[in-house]
Length: 418
Image (tube, rainbow, N blue to C red; front, top):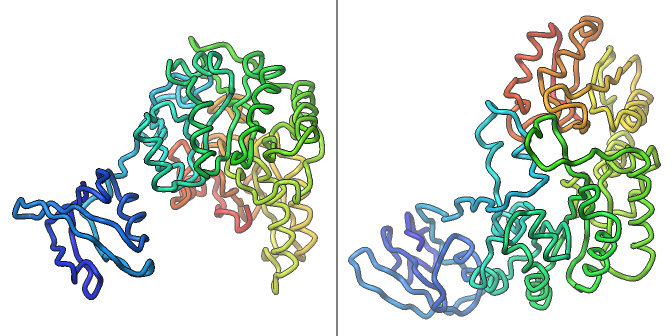
């Protein structure tokens, strides 16, 4: 149910007599759960809407309109409170985090609506038949789905959820209805790799609307005491996975199967070319992020009407895995500027442990620890965007850019390119 807060003047809702305090309870006889119901039907040309008036009467209205017209209703609440995860995955990163961090970092979301709206990955283990049919009816496409394995019994064990084996049926229903899927496989050594990975990739190829598949390594922090034992990947392992996925891509037509950049860094192999990532559907998953970053930098340099950086000595940081790649990018920036030097420091992650080596999980305190003895020799520290919150200059440990600047005694700012 959606309670109306305001009816926009000169819109169809006003003409139909909707008032503040009325509630929308159904469209075409389907119960209203949240704003997505309204947005879908408001874009249709014909539908019925059931209204619970503020005087307690229930009224059903037949609406006929141009698709571009809107009821113009504003609601008190969108009903999109996040549905949380009911799984207990053996590789869950949230369970590997220390105490005392921002409360939002401990929220395990598993909400198909947020998958549609924001690209969040969901497992569908908390999706029943009614939810599934709602996804299909409202055409919530694309969805980002954490598959991990198409072996139902193994999926139940990996997620510790007895409903996890329904994934085959769920994919069949979604793809048959035209819902596009971008799939994720978090690879756990000796669990869902090897022959199990081959099986999963081959099964996913049979679903026409599975558009991309990302294979990513599971994150392992030092806070795994009492958890399922998982080994970190090494150079040899990463190289074998690269070879396996390349073979799967070459065997037949199917979804675009891509690996997280981390596999190539770990294997000390060259990243695939920019063009191989298609529309970069899984860039937020660390798949093609480096190739896209390099292309963006090259285009910015090519189109720039002024140097990207003023003359001076700069510092920047990276996680240990991407150091060689970041050095390539920095050289391009340096060569495009005059009297600019940039030193790149690969920061060991002491906060989460050395097995966590990506740039996005660096904390303010680790950056401070790595730079405190050299910062005074530089004019400015450039912080890569992935280290910081999207709309706030805060690191994962809560330290702000201003705090880091004060501790180091130099100017610190978010990098213009990252």
